[in-house]
Image 1 (tube, rainbow, N blue to C red):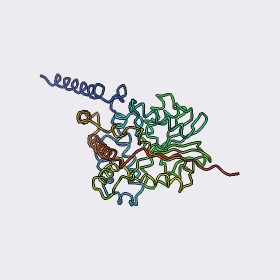
Image 2: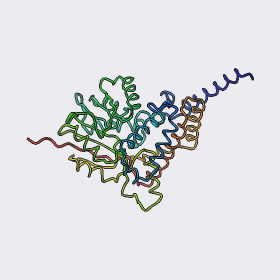
Image 3: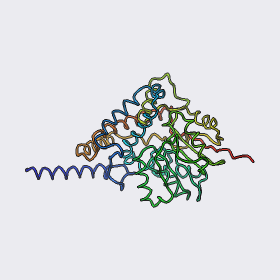
Image 4: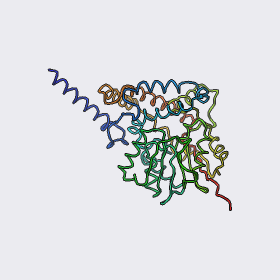
Length: 363
């Protein structure tokens, strides 16, 4: 076999492998979507491996050291790096909504996600003519569902420049770019005037902040008096035992894989909201029955794991995916294993919800 024939044979085999693993064996949620992009936005292809090493060395430290780090800007920049690294893998495996939802009997994960996002819109009574804030919007999956369901205009903010570009492209393709706006920024210092939003929601994004009160205080500032705010977040439950090494490792592994300084206890969400001035109207764990176990979505068979690992490895060898993306995938798989254990034992929930209201101005 001459060199030309061998090259064409390798190209055909590579293309067939990508087709088989992505479209034939791939998740039902991503069939019909684009092929794995894996470009990682503001992190160049040649930087992925080094950026992953820097990120991991920062978050592998003890949670006390991370929480006490004086260089807050550096910590925030690593969160941006994290989403530049993982966004394409998240979109490939989860679609455009990077969050857990209550699992519903007889419903697919995709259907349950859309139902949950509509519940978020209904919780804050979003309606046409309103301006609603999406705190930590990612690539805008919830934003588009809520805009289409409620008719409201949505403004999302994310720290990741790459997610801004992805969200804007998705908004344009969905025909919602007239009602969905995305800005890059830190939700601890939002570029919006006081009392400028009719409602707000934060879907599992505030857990990245070192101080939860800073997030809630900033949301409180930009909301109009009487406006509603709903948020759900990742927290440890009353079943978590800090003297159990297995519990500690599961929670720490969840924190590392999610770029979190520390997970908060379940009761802290409502307490912090009251501290900054909100009226708390409701609080509950949406993962409890009648919802089915949320962590089943993380249960990857060995076949699926090796399928994904092989696909990303092949793409890396072919230089379609940047060097270092295999390590990023491994990091996410390890985090998923820790979260599955934490969910099965009941020591962790990603769906602790509070519904709040900014008090009206009294006459």
